[in-house]
Length: 236
Length: 305
Image 1 (cartoon, each protein chain N blue to C red):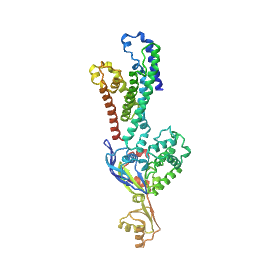
Image 2 (cartoon, rainbow over the protein chains, first blue to last red; image 1 turned 90 degrees about the vertical axis):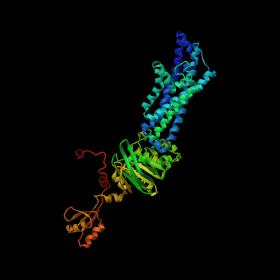
Image 3 (cartoon, chains in turn cyan, red; image 1 turned 30 degrees about the vertical axis):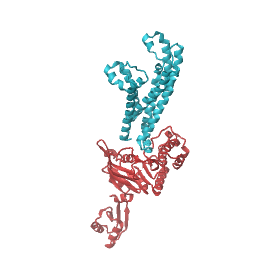
């Protein structure tokens, strides 16, 4: 359902864009990008990936089956690693269905309204369709997965994960420039947006490709390390 | 064999288990007794590596549980039988565990048969009664056919047939040379099943001795002596260190000497005996006596009266 909602919402955004394009300001029309605009419905896919990542851990705590898991497999690092691999693959797989789906459903609508379109054979579109599922999938699967081990509560971990992804984006226009440059710039979602080309060099939170990859990697590895450290120290 | 050495578990300022040292030997059934909150479940969880000891070590067959590569083939544990995925069938509940432990699929059918659940193998475990959940938990513990069994309250919710089944099962396992540790609140059940008892109170080991010794050592175990010259016998028995109290006329209650010694004393002094019998305390009486000072949660006297 979330996959359908994501693709449907992107189609809706494409439809509204097509219907209102002529009424838009010159600046907005100049900013129109037939690739990045299709990501509008991703919020539903993102919530799906976060929810699956979190509940893969917290459902075991709420049913107390986590004890059975660790009685059967007392090596906690091994259980953690196995779950992390499955969740990362699941996150990338869902993203790999949703993101191309959103792209493919939007292009005929843009074409219908005479707007610029993109094809999967275009270099930029092909790059986007490969990188976006990877980055969105890993980012929204592994960091919430780590939060779930740390918080052990479905509601807390989902709230923290969605807040962590969406809140910085929401508050960016409201916070002082130095916060944008020195804090928000180094959050994983910002780094991911830079890599996907959603933020250009003129943006105060912009990071170059190498720096963005390092920031994302540090966040993902750091969150997983903290989670596995806590898991090994806590009683189950 | 399970060996605990200097084992302590603290939660902040609260000591749940305090310097426990004991061995659970193979070939016998060891009962694990203690009042509510004494630390029995904590101890079982510590053995299984679910909780981490603050101090001390515990090994199962010479290795810590968390270091075991194939734990299902070494230890079978019944800790929380209600912890199930309610939407799964009994068969699939056992199958995922077998697959996680690298066990062949036929073990699932075997333990379902052994636990008397073969007819309900396809039913969702969410609809199981407490007794059926208990049988399923025991089936899980037996999947790996392990030499060490750890059962926390195994007869909870079982009907009399189920209780007999568990009793026969653990006896069979002990007779095969396996290590069996049982915890239970049901003293009569434990008295009939266990060969050896470990008693903990407020996290400390209060007793570690054979069942017979436990009931014999109780102050409520005594020898009843009936004699027409009972008064005369009292001084002779007390001279040998016995504690003697008078019941009805001609009847004595003696602790500290067994029947053979009392009989010999009476014979030596030419005192006739009409009755000489041993009255052994129940496990419950012996347990209450041992844990009198260790009860964590006690009903108020006026409410209990």
